[in-house]
Image (cartoon, rainbow, N blue to C red):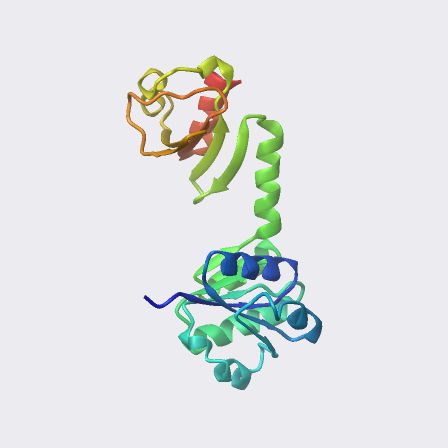
Amino acid sequence: MKRSQYAVIGLGRFGSSLAKELIKLGYEVMGIDKHEEPVEAMSEELTHVVVADSTDEDVIRSLGLRNFDCVIVAIGDDIQSSILTTILLKDIGVKMVVAKALSELHGKVLNKIGVDRIIFPERDMGVRVAHQLVSPNLLDYIELSCEYTIAELTVPRCLDGRTLRDLDTRAKYGCSIVAINKKEGVIIAPTATDSVEEKDVMVIIGTNDQIDHFEKAVIR
């Protein structure tokens, strides 16, 4: 089976970190940047690297990006280049375009021109860190949409030995425990008879309010 191919345009801190992680996950990755230094730095890390101006239509076409499964525009500090690059990628028919937004306004423009997914790395990380600071039991927090969130919560001593039937999170709080990470492994889609132990990690899905209600009522 053919491995998925990704291209990352902009090899700054975010772009290079993303590209290296995709390589670790077993995918082929082309790295593109208009500066030689970051391209040289990543030459041993990625499948292919290219020094190129992504705002030049002829260059974009010559790289064959239309054949990639996904192209990520990770240009760091030049909104104009980010937007022009994105427009060109959509024009040549790239299957999926993901773009990093530097601001809410930048994100709105990217949305207008049809970007498939917009990433706000600094904003999203700020939100996650804020939630982790105010909730000691919260290990991670990912906003799935404007309504739904998935969170990882450490099981406190007060819940040690309780079954999911005892907790009854869906009926009482509206959120659902979809996995339990234990020392011996992860239980996916646990049943009502599965129990949690202190220091297990519960993976919970629900709205922000539902998860917050559960945490305040049961964990804190």
